[in-house]
Image 1 (cartoon, rainbow, N blue to C red):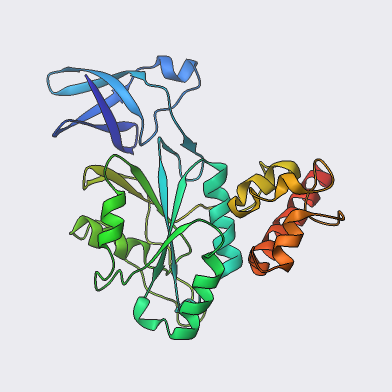
Image 2: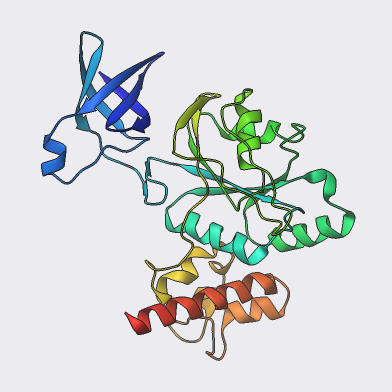
Length: 288
């Protein structure tokens, strides 16, 4: 039998096979192979007396480290317009991590009712050149969720973003039940409290959603300065027109990417985020 691991707790794995969920243990051989079953894994199992054993882990299309989830295909990147205020620098880091892990990123701008004309204009100008899909939503009221439902079938979707942005509230609305505990915003720090304790796949709308506290590490430790430019989709149409091969779009003259920034085609703040991450990556490698 082949199924999907939807939850793993204390050495037990819960595998969904069609409409049935079977409690399984993993064979000892996986320890010798230094391979651990992950939530999201497609696995072959045998069942005897209503108890299952995982015999084989099928090849993974992707693997996230934090959280440990396999075969994720896309990410709902959730940021609030206000309370807490949207942090574009942090948002760019989440988008870079999605690109690093080959995940389709869909930006969800939550708390739509708090967005005035000025905030909406800023957000629209920001994403205009990136190619990312973005939607204004009200997770608590259920506003704007129809578009997100359309992205769920046949996908394993990770919901990520900063604490307090409304991730767990969004999960509950999409699943139409209180499957996740929601947190509150700390009045002192205006930051959210983490509410999710483990990763779990939730079947919904012909796909799965995994809730997580967000990527727990946003340091760009596994990327080179040469690779970073490929993680900014709006650079793709210009980078081959640079004068120098291997241009980092930093201090080099006759750089087509910098030209696109100067002409207002690429958002200047997005480019500044690129430079900030580039500086971090170069410093990391310098001290390796």
